[in-house]
Length: 152
Image (tube, rainbow, N blue to C red; front, top):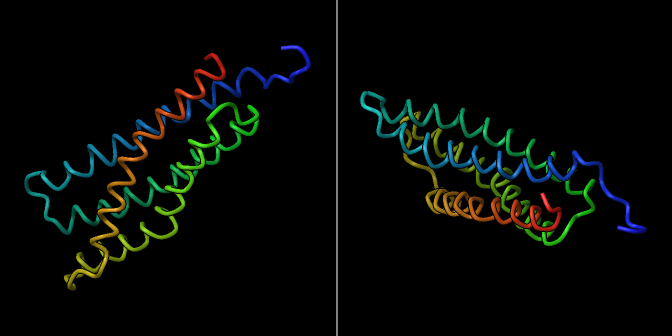
């Protein structure tokens, strides 16, 4: 590509690796671990909620780390193709989840563990589930966009 500066070879690989890894994390935690812990024999609901609070707090931190790595990799790759749009949509979801929905759900779980009546948050829980489903669409879309544009 004459006259165009190419990113270092590792940058496109990193930019495409992160969405694949992130997708695996979301699928493993949100769609496998979470529902299973509530069906495990002998695990009281309060224990499952307590474990869920710890797991989702950790998941949030991991996702923010993956988001930052992806942002830097996309920046280093020059925001190729449609990747900026897919990443912007993904960023909006991560922001909503971490800044608004997760704290509401953490409080709701704490109330349930303490035996208090459930605080508001049922609708937020539904939105969170839908947003997780949306991520499992956006992450492969980001990956495919990068694979096509960067010829990975």
